[in-house]
Length: 187
Image 1 (spheres, rainbow, N blue to C red):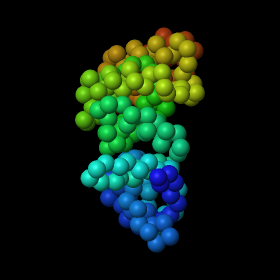
Image 2: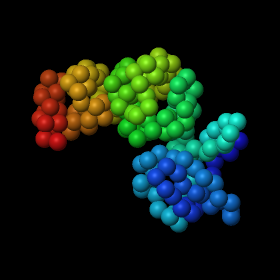
Image 3: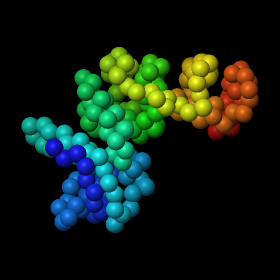
């Protein structure tokens, strides 16, 4: 099993990069956000998962161990393959995705191409008790989760709701919700 690589980015495309590790090139599929900010010639370290099928072996890499652990939990759900799981990382940050799963936010998960309502429900049911929410959404605790739920109920994404509430400076939940709606209305 290949679980960690350190090397130089030889080349990259839209879905993967070639990592030169002591003269050996490894094709590593990684998150869209990491691919976007990575540069050819840059030295990087990745925690990896080797996915073996009867017709191929693919390597998936992540900057943080937390991302790798969440990825392996996602692919343990029936109907979620490694490419779909990697696509989930394009939706939002890991903490926000975990919070959406904990809140049972099916609409958030179905925004991803390839994940339908039934698969999203399966993700929520299978992972709700298995994910660690030590930092679900910094600054948003207690009754603020009701405000997040209200905003997502109005059609805003979970990440949009969290970001708008973080920008709000009001004291009460009602006032924070009003300010968040104004912030979201400007976008």
